[in-house]
Image (tube, rainbow, N blue to C red):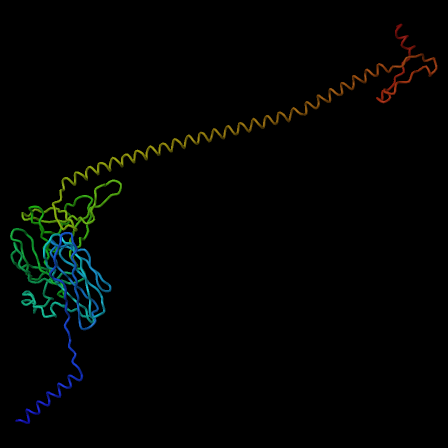
Length: 451
């Protein structure tokens, strides 16, 4: 017996030595740590830091926080490689791809009042070797009553909805004041839901396929759609956001948009459309028009300020009156534009005609001037020969007259019977003029005179 005890002791000693020699590798579970209790200061900045750790490198990290939107307003987030973050309306979604064993995030808020508040880590999912791990459940957290009761049920037997490319399954809802638990046929599957005690409003609880998101949604049995469950106060009314009636009344100059809500969800809403040059109504890009129902069952449009997170009734009568005024103004402006265009067209037509007439007159005047110039030149050309002929005729007449005078003075007088020496020779000038001498017989002249 003593030998057996001695043998067991030696065996344990050897095992201990082997473990100490080769070392012991302790597998640490993934964990998330960060600020949960913070102090808010009016118009001051509140910062919170969070660290996610794992024993092996994490391919992707997704962290979801929730805060009191009555006390804090989300400003910004940061951290890690390929970081993305958004928040508002009481929720913040942060993610990164660290490819490391540690991922750090930082969030900044603006305080609305001086008080202490809490920031809860509602979800933390990491991806390791292509597999998603819920850090909150892996680090020893206790599953909720819903998960404990329904954890063994198969998701394939549940009604499901696809939101932001992720499948959400209907789960047993938590209690909500003013709602009663009922069974509802959703997609042909008997599902648990909540029904408002006075209104035909149904609320279902949805959980994502990886367990990261668990939220309440308003279910519309007529369309089969779901939107995030939002219950807000507007004056004395307690308003629940619902899906707008398809084909129902929508205020003019509003177009459909998806209003972001939380990290992954959207709510159907409308946003005002600006028409440049005519519509001078100020359009706040963070104001949306949402459809809601109050505690009396009255459905109406509400104006929601995304930044201030406040809701107020939409005064449709005042807005429509303003729009009618704008439409009348547009019609008058369009009429004035049409009239101006018509006058401009008439003016262009008249000016065109006048220009054509002026151009035709200019052409006619140019033609007439050219004709006058041509006629004038032709007349001058015809007058030049006449003047030359007159000068020649005058010269001939003068020459003839001179010749006749010279002839008369060049007659030779004398007796034919006398010697030829009695004749006088003509002057040299006459010879130069080539005047022919004529011999006159004086006896013949005397006989002619006697006769």
